[in-house]
Length: 232
Image (cartoon, rainbow, N blue to C red; front, side, top):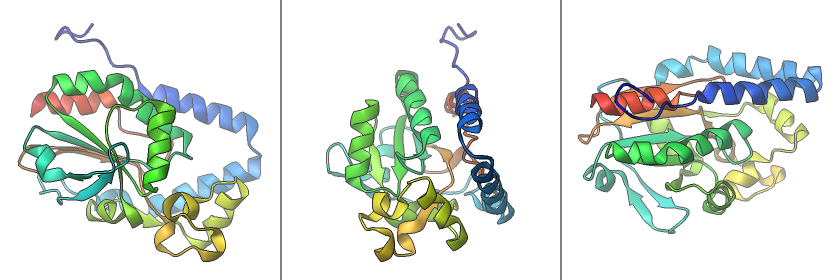
């Protein structure tokens, strides 16, 4: 137990590191090397430095919830309490689904703090619905077409042309998951993704805490997010 009488929060990164270890044991070295280069190139764009700043007013958004098929308005949610906005790439990413499951298990702790969790992805509502059902998620998954809201938060990017063949090679059809189209009909918008990131918003919509990483294998620790909510 913690000093405050709350249960300790397990390390998410420990779980993600186990995925990385298993991947290194199973995946061809040339594919691993390409993934490393792609991650380094994304980091070199400076995307982590473009994230919405602490204290900045977060953009409001209206997006469709996969479970209810209804519009969720960020301003309506903030009227009820602080909000944690979690951006993830898609159900095809094992790091993303592991992170979502971690938040599933910690959801009661988040609600005890009076906060609400919204998870945003550019994938279609149908894909978000699959994600909810498969991983038994208790919080809304919102479709962010073209990663437009992620762009407003400063964390969106387009998968470069030279990296798209890598995803084809590992049978990840990002355009289909995001837009329902095959590679030959894919638009630039269908190749848009967010870097994995978490923003904690006060009820006035300002950013109390945020963290995101160009390296998809690294994620914000839920314990730090819960601590940020305690500090609001």
